[in-house]
Image (cartoon, rainbow, N blue to C red):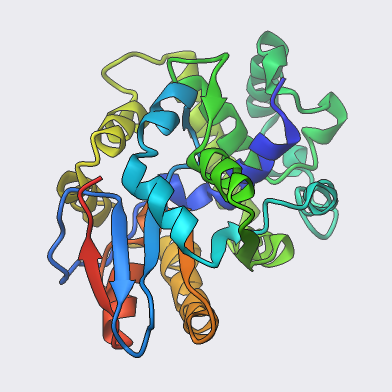
Length: 299
C-alpha cells in the first residue's frame, strides 16, 4: 500500500512528468546540484533537482558526500512544501479531492469508468480507498498509479525523503516554499476534463506497458545518470500548452521572491523537482536574473 508521505510527494510532484516549454539560455552542465553565491550572500546556498518518484537505491546513490556536506553547512533545508510536519501532511489529504463536488463518473463514459475500476481492482497496492476514486483529482490518481512505471514496486522512494533524513540528522530547520493548499490550487487550474483524459491515457499505457513505450523510465535513467544536458533537451522538446506553464513556470515565478527573502537572513539547501531548474523561466536562470551566481557542482 502506498504510504501517505508518498501520496503527498506525488501530489506536489506533478511537474516531474510535465514538460516545460521554455528554451534554456543558461549553459547546462551534467549535474543536478548547483551552488548559489554572490549578490551579497555571506555564504553559499545550494539548489538540488529532486525527483518525486524513484527507486530507493537510486535515490540513495545520488546523495554524495558533497550533497551531505552542503546540507550540513546551511541553516535551512527548503522543499516545495514542508515535509517535516506529519500532522500537516495528514491535513493535506483534504486537498486531494476535486472541488465543487465534481465526480470522475461525470467526466468519463461508462466504458471508461469500467476501465478505471478494472485497473483499480487488479492493483490493490494503489492504496486508495475505493470510495475515493470518484472524487480524487484525476491528475493525482494519474500520479499515484505512475509508480507502476518503476522496476522496483517494493522500493518506491523519492529524493526528498533522503534529503529530509539528512536535514533531521543535522538538526536543520526544515521548511517549504509553498503550502499544500497552494500546490493543490495549481492542480485545480488544469480542467478536470483534461486531467481525466490524461488518467485514461496513463491507464491504457500501463495496461500495455513495455520497455519501449515506458518514457518515464527512459527519463529516469537520464536523471539517475545526472545527464542534465539531455534532460534539458527532453524538457524543451515537450508541449508548450498553458497548463505546463501554470504547473512549472508560474510556480517558479511565485517562489523566486520568497527564496530571495529567505536568502537575506539564512543559507538554504533548496530541493525541488528537477524540471523546475531548467529553461528561461527555470530557477537556475531566475537566480541569475536576480543577480546571483549559479554554478553546477559535479555530484
